[in-house]
Image 1: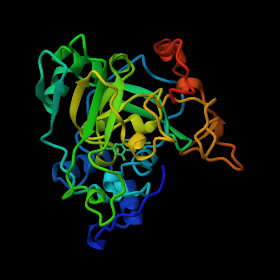
Image 2: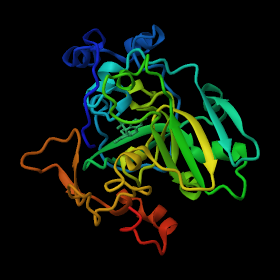
Image 3: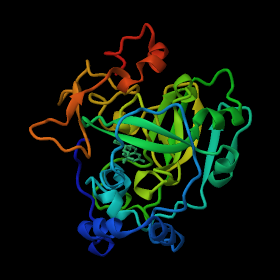
Image 4: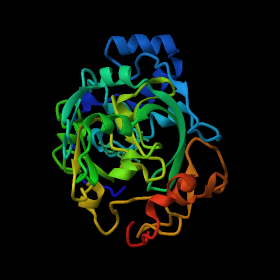
Length: 314
Ligand code: MTE
């Protein structure tokens, strides 16, 4: 995304990136679980997740790339910062407040929600607005399941989301220079939020969500650019008016509300026609592939936008 002023981070907080990667390579699953219990690593206990039919048949992006090439500005601007600088973040206990235009507002404990809605595994194609992509096996439950619990009123048209603010645990939030305004916010239309593809993800690769990927719960909307996938969600508010998202607030010329993956509409500063698949080798752009309308999910979601001008509603 657009580079802003780098936050100042105490050198004592930085785990050297090379060391972190080596540590990961030598860790078996048992060691990862033990580390999680000791609170020193993001990875935690395995999630028992049933396979879902919402799964693409493409090679998975290696977990090393999924967990070390991240955008999570609360932990810094560089792709390696979230993995290196999120060790102090405590994802549990955790609650999500759901309020606004609903019949039954409430505050929900994430561990209770996971018991109530056992996560299933869904392999989704993910496309970042920066023109790279990954294929990630998420574990989660439909956002619609949580929305049903709170009984949206007829007047509710949109859903707004908010990330936690914890400058003591998120070094990107206490930098001398401000990168973004906090909290990070996002929004969906209610019918998008209720769509069966829209997931509240609580894990990936069968393990509880790593801090750097949005622990303990984040949004996954596979037909939209990755920035819609707001991480570490603490509040969901049903609204009548269209909510703004962080990138739209930061740069409205470049980022809109919808952010549907669309190879026919370029970003003002680069093409969206093709993408680079992270983790695949390839000389001279051999790992570039064409970007698909709605990221390949057109059959499932194009009808949501029937009659809309997708160039105006970018
Ligand atoms: N959520 C929060 N709270 N803060 C962020 O900076 N970055 C977004 C999105 N969610 C971001 C966020 C962007 S730009 C992308 S591409 C995805 O997270 C990346 O998710 P991943 O690191 O799990 O691949």
